[in-house]
Image 1 (cartoon, rainbow over the protein chains, first blue to last red):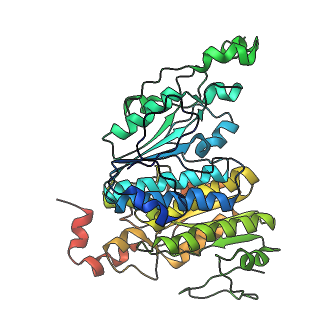
Image 2: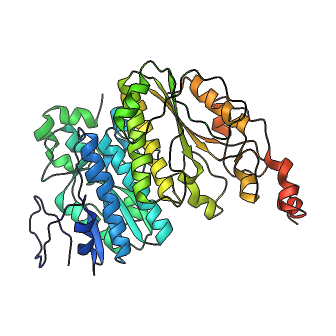
Image 3: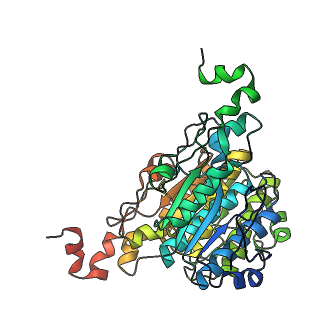
Length: 223
Length: 223
């Protein structure tokens, strides 16, 4: 039995059991945890303009429901989709590079809700000995479409790789920036590479000229 | 109009307007914010064994209600009672000293809820230009009664001083350990002293012999 969520992912693996449940409803989620080896929790209202009611129900209560039902079912591994928006105010200030361990500076209620999820993950790891890996995911798209996308892009295959490394990891806890090896990235990937074994294959730079035109070169080599 | 909460505080100042409201009920809290200069938010289920329903309603939803209603009423200053339990797993590991900026390691759902409150406070400060000061309060008691109390004690007058400094502070945001100048403290007070201007007057050491007996000296001067 697997909890899965698909969107825009090419080459879907064969799935023998898909169940639809609402993370806000503990009793809907709990049965799906039985017999599961790992939970990859990608569910959230991921809009930076999401209102409190949505963030509270889907991201805060929903995340608690997933972690708690996983724990009670004996699931040892949870991969938690966190976000760059936990640290988004550093980005708005152009205060780069950003490292995983810096204090959180959420740019939105969405970002706050993911800071909550990271703290809850740390607690479940420390208190119950579960392995919870938080991936601060960039912009998971087929390809970047603007300048910010050049910074933040996470290609499909790099994203899939990061989730696989998080599932396999023997770490009890970690918070890891997760984006492709973009030339224009502003987040430090050192720990994701060294501790999680992530080896990104894609670089958004191949799209830079198409997106930025002549400015593509200026940005990299300021006069 | 002032939002106040009293418990075991000697020499209460004269209060001309006390209103009772439930932080879980936004519509009860919001009217009390009108015309207020500063909010000192001490409300929480502060038990480390508090269950999710209580933490969710009082600490998470309640904190959002206080910050949001303060913002909409134009209140510029919120002092938020956080807790040592945000970092409690460092204490359990005897991983000392603990500094404000280390990644959170909550020891309980209560600690997780206060990590949420700190992240929300940071967001409100960054996003709306309000001043939100988070005090990671130790053990606010008339006097310590056991060994952990010797570490964590916050005397009444030191606690009152810290809240006053937080109200007066021109900082937009800060997270500060708040305890008395206990000889046996394990949390770093440097920033509380330097950035907030806190000058604690009390030291739990005067109670050490009474609490620990002959062991009082051994703990300070191991052979």
